[in-house]
Length: 221
Image (cartoon, rainbow, N blue to C red; front, side, top):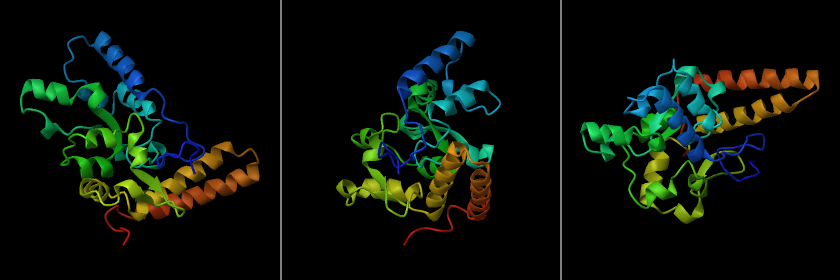
């Protein structure tokens, strides 16, 4: 398990650090090169752009919601999320600019992003589920079998339950993604070539199993 008790991390994962500060620096870099840019989202969401990769690195290349690693899934399985969805803003040019500001963006796997896009986060849930400062890790946890669960404090909260179900956080694939993250970390840390090769084989088998499963096929009862 993660040393920082963040359900998105294993013991091998770096802790998210100064996310907002890094995002501010990236936004300044983009605007210095493209001073007429209004909607920053368009720059970081472009997969061909260097800013797409730089944005992912701010989140350690992991989904801000479920923690799956970009390197373990196809490149196209990730995209940039509007933390407060676009419906939270006026349907005007100014509204689109506000929605596309760097501080409203998060790195997400497609499954989490598509599940979340119709959810409007209002106070206090925009704070409870904040992915940049780690608050979301106080709402969800990993159980002993590596499934994502709702923490006891929020068990009866209907909105949290809806968020959890909409993002499929309790699904079997989330568990396999975490096991893959754990194996990938062990593989990188291993120095014995024989053990490293076995870990690589195990990771390959796990990823084949995971990729055969659609995220909507296997939910927890």
